[in-house]
Image (cartoon, rainbow, N blue to C red; front, side, top):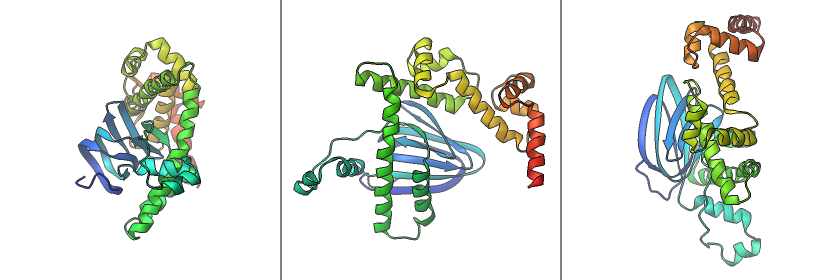
Length: 286
């Protein structure tokens, strides 16, 4: 990362093990074929395929520990770039013509992982495919387009914040940050034994306050979210023959395969073994 702080740039690499700690620019992080774990002063963030992490300028650490190589594609935005793009979207044409180089107010994004929208996914994949062949002007155009999309898509986050029951905007913003801290912690560590009190402590909220606020933002409780993530992981592992039922149970946070089987059948309507057989038969019939 020995680059000028004011520049836009890309990091595109593959690795199964990596660790870095330091200060970074405003950036978005994407990964394929695995996941990376980040830590900032706001908490932990697990980034896997079809999601991206949006980080403001500041300190963070990243760790990758996977059996296979995972592909990282990360975009870093230079100082003032996001502010300039936002000003051209927000200010009147007259203002932009009168003072085209006016310094804009600092712009801060909500640090969290996001589901990649079809529009943003297409833009990022276009840049990923061609960034080594095309010239600097084309690169800058892609950065501008992607930043515009990021700014527009922040409106979804603003609507989520409005769902919280708090009178003052500053209170809603802070409560949202704390609830998303809990949400990201669950995403990062759902395969470990998690208690409501521990998640609430990470978010600096009481358990009951977290429970109520989490449901307001995400429409589910922390436990429901943990179960959902465990089921997703279990289905992925069951689709291969690499692990047996006991190994899969341990892999997703259960102390024994009986508890895992009961939970899986409750959510999917069939046992894990039956699900595996069905997936394998469906693959053979394709």
